[in-house]
Image (cartoon, rainbow, N blue to C red; front, side, top):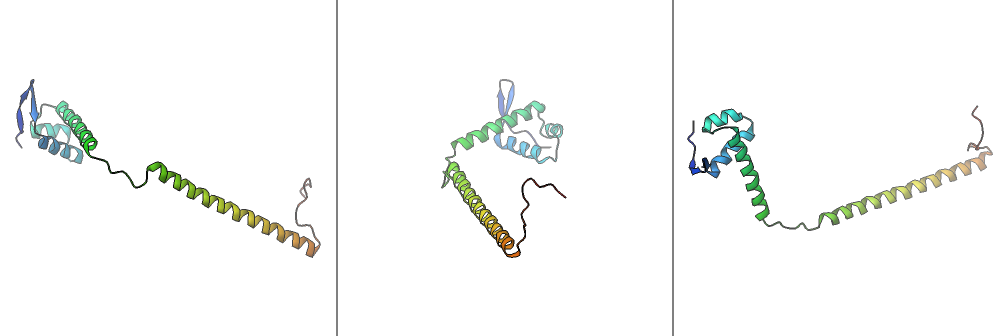
Length: 130
């Protein structure tokens, strides 16, 4: 069993070293040990201490992230999305143009076949199925 690293009492509560809190949370999040086992191993007063460690860690991470300067992307996200939408729109327009061209070719082929063979290929509107 490891010994608690405490800085001293603060209003009836012990103040634990940041390194110990991180080590305990790392073990907890690894899933290899239960909360109860951690409390026994490090002689913690109970689950509320672990909850306090988790709150401390979350706040520490938020402060670290907010103090880290963010490097802006080369393109803002909205510009990248707009470019992607424009690309998709262009692809769809090209597919539509090709589909219309194919329909025109097929209709022309049917017209030529009807004239050459002197038969009706297209079904007339309003005819009853046989």
